[in-house]
Length: 241
Ligand SMILES: NC(=O)c1ccc[n+]([C@@H]2O[C@H](COP(=O)([O-])OP(=O)(O)OC[C@H]3O[C@@H](n4cnc5c(N)ncnc54)[C@H](OP(=O)(O)O)[C@@H]3O)[C@@H](O)[C@H]2O)c1
Image (cartoon, rainbow, N blue to C red; front, side, top):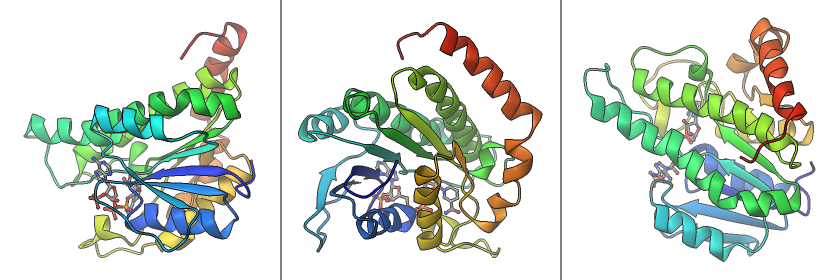
């Protein structure tokens, strides 16, 4: 799947990795980039169409889907990460609302367009889907759930010609990681690696040095083999997603 000439939608497009994904899609020759944001966005490139899109707002999701005529690549990037210690159920619900149900809702809304174009979905999850960081456990739980959603969608949509990728992103230098004094990748390099992964048809994309260090063991590991074995059941008996 080449980005050139394609129509791409990025959620959470106004800053951080989402903003870098918009810039990267444009520089790869995307024909149209829909930039989903919660506040109005002005962009100098005429190929960018801003979309009012709070991913927790069902009416906005519906209106956004109705305003887009065709779509090749949906990037579910919008996300929140707040400190918590699992003492408050509300913190868990807040993370699930954006990071899991937001991803789910936007995906369902744009699925007819993506099946029509035989397109691709990219869910920007996190290495924390695999190994939580105990200062942000609610975030990690929501990313684990979003990754599992990604794996099931991958199996369920394969028969309908839609590729489903996970970006298992590691520490990246954005507002989200401000205050963490650790090595971080630039959002621009992560955006490049995510679209490289899509263009190279990598199911699971490890777009930064930290995540890349576990890529081989993940791809060749027993858990990935089990994901493929389980997916083969769906391939044998297609069901609607
Ligand atoms: N930074 C990292 O180290 C890292 C690592 C792994 C994965 N990720 C993932 O990468 C994605 C982007 O994160 P980032 O680092 O670029 O963080 P960021 O700079 O904090 O940006 C988050 C983006 O998500 C948007 N957003 C939040 N809630 C939303 C909602 N309800 N509806 C629509 N948009 C919403 C924000 O919009 P507003 O400006 O309106 O708040 C913003 O555009 C997230 O899913 C994050 O979990 C990041």
